[in-house]
Image (cartoon, rainbow, N blue to C red; front, top):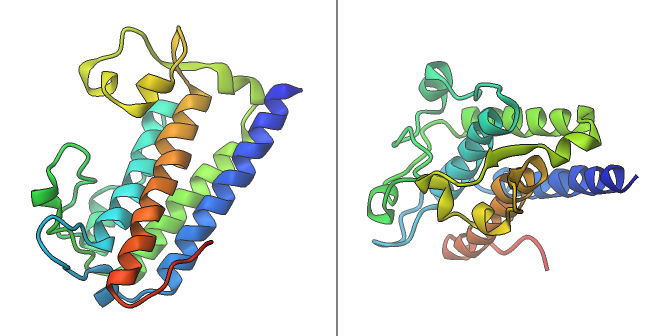
Length: 189
């Protein structure tokens, strides 16, 4: 019963978080998204592309399903840097731009829809499955999800919470702040 309550909460929170992205994207234009403020300040394009692409990439570790991102999506979206940037510096990623905003929206929607459909069909007991066991490899050991992990490792619930939900809210906060730099207001109170 508890697993069902947790899954129901996760499903609702994920949809709510995704809805913030849909609202943000629908109220910005390409110039605002690609706006370069100054060195050291990432454009909204970074936060949008990074989060959608990381949510997509997380599917491999969580479900064994390959990401949606491929050469076709790259040709359609045309990001300046075809990389989520997790292992790159801010100095590199300040150059991120989205080439085709409508195609990016389509990619983001495909990623979010897949996540929500997966959660809708998930057996609640799967949330306890360990997706990365201890000891963690170096690229995981320094992450927030490693701090959250239990004795056995990172569970599917930990992964969904950290890699998608909490990560998404973090970047939405960046987007809300950056909206002020391009003359738009925040989205939530």
